[in-house]
Length: 216
Ligand code: AP5
Ligand code: MG
Image 1 (cartoon, rainbow, N blue to C red):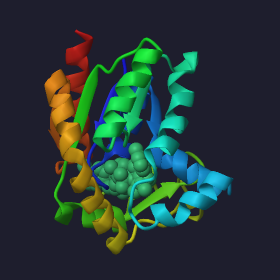
Image 2: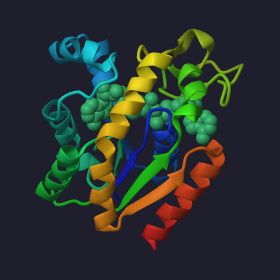
Image 3: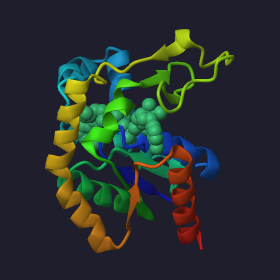
Image 4: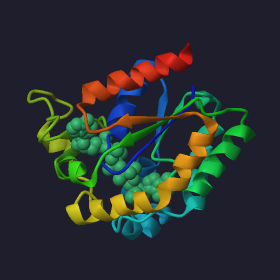
């Protein structure tokens, strides 16, 4: 089973992907995380994309496509991928279809998490991520456990693009590009729209039901 999950910044793509990974033993392929890894590792690519990412704009389609093909072509992940934050425009949607076809795979479910710009503000400004295990927290809605060794406060990091200004631009970038992606998946009948403004648990429950539905 391959799943696509998309939605605006702060919609909960990463949070729900973590849940799906654990419950259904899939592999999360977050293009944002792959790109941040390039920056953390100070690769040539990382140096090129760092200011672009911190401006809230999209990295080039070709760069992201090269990164995801490595996973799609790897037998270890065959039909076990959750695409978090890919595709983000029509070209990427077409590209994903072609890449999956090339490796004899397809998409089984597309989840669109919907949320307003107003509702994402506290999610973005309150977010921190554990640098050890990658778990996502929020000081307002989902604080890290107090006595945890792994997710202790010294290991929690903020993302450099998690300022209000950049989040607004990221939201606008999303809105500007996403309509053709929605149309694309509506035509395939794979699209399910999930209200992302509810609690994490409520959203996970709906996503579980949708996945169980396609597993039959
Ligand atoms: P990316 O890393 O994908 O960022 P994004 O799309 O802006 O989304 P976020 O990761 O901010 O939000 P999320 O939906 O994962 O929310 P989360 O679960 O963390 O991309 C970053 C950049 O990389 C892009 O701007 C672009 O430059 C580049 N890029 C990436 N993919 C690309 C592509 N395909 N093509 C070109 N460029 C690309 O939750 C957010 C917070 O809210 C957390 O604190 C969480 O604890 C909390 N939370 C989650 N759910 C709930 C809930 N239901 N109730 C309350 N709080 C909640
Ligand atoms: Mg994310």
